[in-house]
Length: 422
Image 1: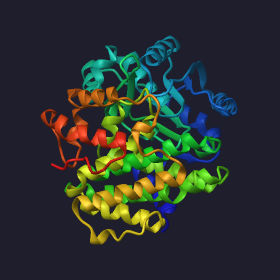
Image 2: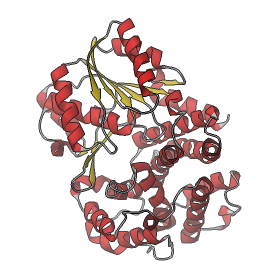
Image 3: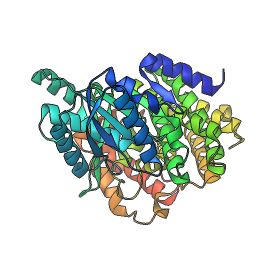
Image 4: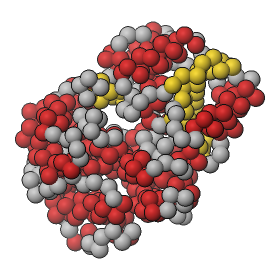
């Protein structure tokens, strides 16, 4: 079984028949939405070609007898709080009984959070952390509306997951809701909406998919779920490493685009099996300079070196993926500990260079040492404590400055040698 077929088998295992995906599935939106409600709020992104897609969605909804109560502009990158407030108000005014979101991770995440605020109330700060939405739902006795989440980018996997990332633009800090209650009830993904994506978005999204798989894999070592997570991660990472260069070199290769969609869905599956950690934690403090996926992808080689002594089995598996793709010729079975971690990190840099992706934070205009200070402060925030606990080498707040600071400084300068192992 090739990794494309394996991904489809794993998606069936993950979501069963509830997940509708593949090229050209927008005509099915009405049928899916009508199974959940009769009055929809349509929260939508705008991008080249999106109006044609929205027309298909509207026709499908109307044909299925679903009233479109409102058409609402989606969220900007990283789901700013200001967009969340606006979307919440507009959904409340429309009073729908089903939500239909069409967009990338930011719009889907904002829709998740907006429905929480519309239905349960409170401030978004009340829900940052793990399980707080579920607790509030149970206390209130209310139910969140069904959510038809239509993904348009091979990236976050937001249509499949329990995460909602929201950003305070004034401070440049992203925070996170982690809760089963916000998982979209009806996920959809029309792969063809990714076919015209520019190279930068394609790289950021695909490497975000690797980050989801990789970080969950690293954090799963020694846990009962490790074998399943290893299978899902191997599938997702392999699809990206094999097909990202083709998608960048020949953007019209739809089979490569489809493979990246499946790969990032494997990332979504991964983060429902476990949690992300270092790369994602740091990315939350870089939102004013980097896209989320780019920040995660740039940080993970450096965290790989830091975690290396504790994650030798996954490192050998990941290294072999890059070797089979002829990114490296290292025999990873002959390496161990930090040396193994550095070899895998160099393989990750190799893929980045092959597709023209940056490897040093400091090469990006706008990045300063203040970002390092912000990231270190955020790592000590109890609302993001789940990321520290998910690390294969767990840190507490007292260890952040000693061990995380060198990781960030290494990522700034492109140096692995400054990273300290516990």
